[in-house]
Image (cartoon, rainbow, N blue to C red):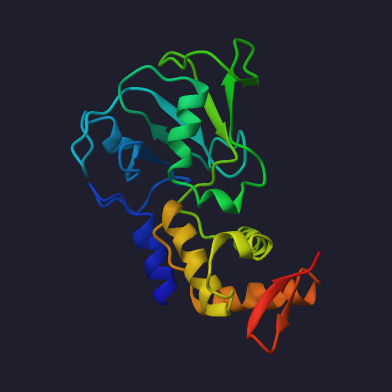
Length: 218
């Protein structure tokens, strides 16, 4: 029951408190990456959270490329934007670099024939439509594969990332620091434990009883 309430609150527009969004579609601001519904977005010229001036450029993104129903928008601050600058902006809201994205962020452009084509360079204008690939919807729950990819990356990079041993508690703490970059959801220790156990069963890592830590298996 509690999880259902939390999920509803996550999908609620903080301005109009509308909980019956279709899809749902939100607009995220690039200044502070806060969300409002796409109806309220048409009304405000400044960010309702940090009061930064907002631009008119919006880039669609979502878990499944070209799934227009289950997607949201990133509204960019005024100024000159390129593919490179947009991706740099968005990376601020992804987990830390050491987690590595499964697929690099990339931008597609809707051409005159109605096809989404790769767009690698040049300025991004208000008149064209763009899709930012491999950018998850932040208000969606984390998938098992997402959490596992963070854990594997931590285990693979253990000696470079932290001086602390990778206990379950340390992995949980680190994964929540990643999660906080892209969502308001908090991962429980139980969720992380289940993912670690799954990785052990599938031979990705092993538990060292002497040190009470986990190690990646090459």
